Length: 219
Image 1: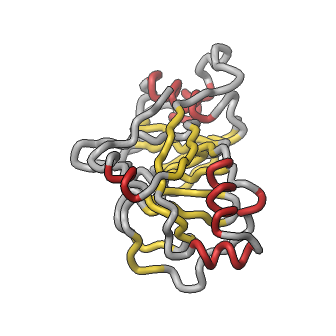
Image 2: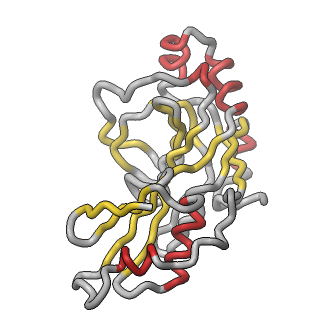
């Protein structure tokens, strides 16, 4: 493992001794002096430090000295199924750019097996890798939208995402989900690194049955 200092209060742990979510969990449970939180992302872990430098050893030294022999070889997070009304304002443009029918875009998105490899940009925004190759390769919009509505389902590059709250955005919008992904006041942030996600199509009428519900793991 190796550590890279980023500013005064963040250390990035690379070459992790196991799956990043399991490594972050172990660091949090170890309650290392000077460490506020450990957050997994892709194949590294961000270690957030307190305002003041701790006395004695640097937290990275304490972390390196932990017993890592009990880490699992792989990490299996929770699984989420997300209903989507595929009526996004970019759906036809996406289909045209990729040489597909809109129905094919919808079908390929549902076939994709997504893995949450990072959460960032805003609370609850999960970067979901695993987009079907037929849908991959789109660059960000030339002019990002100043407002993207909560629940918007989008794709970009080889990823998909759901905007959990209103934000500017440059991804391609292909649909929307009625589920609540985030509630900041109640600290409801269900999606985590290592979780898997699949999307399934619903009609407008069927979507109304999900209104008021929150994102919940099915396993």
